[in-house]
Image 1 (cartoon, rainbow, N blue to C red):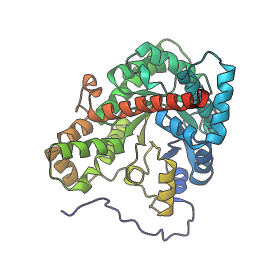
Image 2: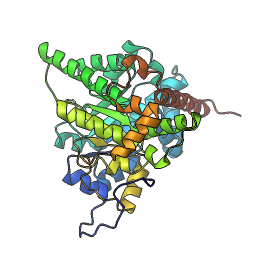
Image 3: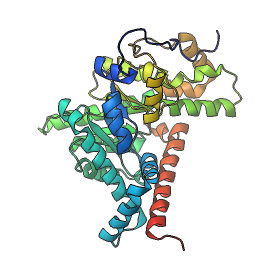
Image 4: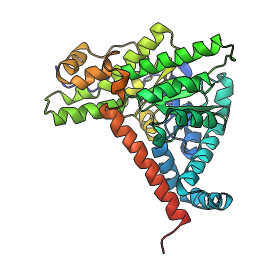
Amino acid sequence: MTSTFATNPVTEDASTDTRPSTLRAAQDTPTSLWNDSADPRELSRSIAEFGAVGATCNPVIAYTCIKSDPETWIPRIRELAEEFPTAGESELGWKAVEELSIGAAKLLEPAFEASGGRNGRLSMQTDPRFHRDKDALVKQAVYFSGLAKNIIVKIPATKLGIEAMEEAVYQGVSINATVSFTVAQAVAVAQAMERALDRRKADGLPEKEFGNVVTIMGGRLDDWLKVTVKRDKIMIDPGYLEWAGVAALKKAHQIFTERGYRARVLSAGFRNYMQWSELVGGDLVVSPPFQWQVDINNNNIPAENRIDVPVDPEIIATLRAKVPEFTRGYDEDGMTPAEFDRFGATVTTLRQFLDADAQLDALVRDIIVPAN
């Protein structure tokens, strides 16, 4: 079989519909588009032009947004330092993250109201330095949830993180599972959310639309498989590795749909356009970075219903046979919760988020204590 990057060739849309591809998918199918950034400049365009009804912030995104807009954030961080004279650089950096997130949440309020809370959400990530402290994660999740009515809080899908998510949902927090790459993680999170919602009902707590989502960072699963293939000197059609994340996302969506889980799957960590195009038609969320949205639309990638089109069985069989880490990521029982923390993509991503926290600290330090 020849190398297969996409089973559906990209062709010019022959119809007279001139709407951007992402807008057609957002308006004509159950698939929701969220912008993988809280940058207000990008988010405003994504909402107006491409149909975005959600957005996200994490340490990497926050650091990038603040660094790329010094005219706004350098004076604002100096003001925050004056307002909070005893705060250190970490506390000031997180206050900037809060302001960035609250501003993005405001832009999404119309979509929040129109969807009854299902969309219009701004995902705000808990401090990755709390990844070993369940109580700290829950406490910060409750606090973030109170910053705006449409905040949804991101907690890593580690063993401890899933326990924190269950407790946070029970306490009324809307959750977006992050640092999540596999079907096993997604199902474990969904089950924890179901338990929390059932507990709320049993205890007579108010029912509401949580808008909970469970992320699979499909491209980061692909990245990890490429690392293992190189490390273990495995010879495989490289195009097959581009399908791993898509396959995991499709399978998770199928499981969620069949079992009626009250959370939706969210596709993030984009590395190829199929992590959008192959999911169109599903009742799920796709969250590409803004530039991916621009490129998808400029290339007129078809907005066709592809969610129920299976990945080529030969690709799945070959990945299973040659790449053991694919099986761990694809099978519902591929890993136990105790194994989530040491999965390669988990370690890599969590370290990246921790590094971004440190970089944000350093950026704030340079602003409030500039070098001579």
